[in-house]
Length: 165
Image 1 (spheres, rainbow, N blue to C red):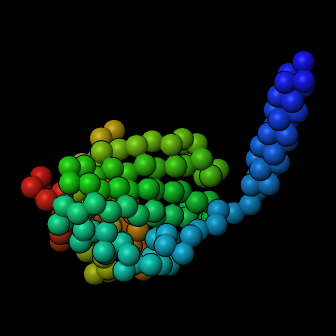
Image 2: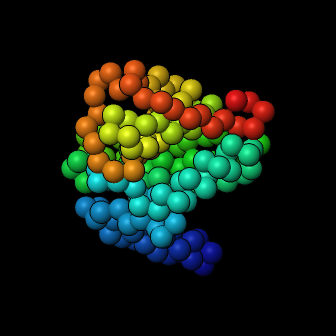
């Protein structure tokens, strides 16, 4: 009998803690970590870390990064990317985007490309991603206007998993 009451008390405490943690996060903006790559409309913060990740991918070295992209409304879209000797994987979390798909999806990708846009700025995209027909946009080094025919006017550099490119 005491064991049953004890378990009910533990369950109640856990439920109160869970509901409090859920309500504490509602309406609050996403807080990035110091190691996150932050992509906003005016450029990319922590760009050196993204370039290091791309270099590691090209060497086939294991690495992982988080890219936090912000919509024009200020909502965070989180992309966790991991690379091991065989796969390049991107997990996209749009649950904080009011107008997004409200989902978490994982894609296997073939390459990371650094593309020069019409303003001669580097743009970072993942290509050949499973379940994702267009390049998976990570950000650009500074703000610019994206044209519909942008893929026709850029030079690009691809970085694939070593041995798979």
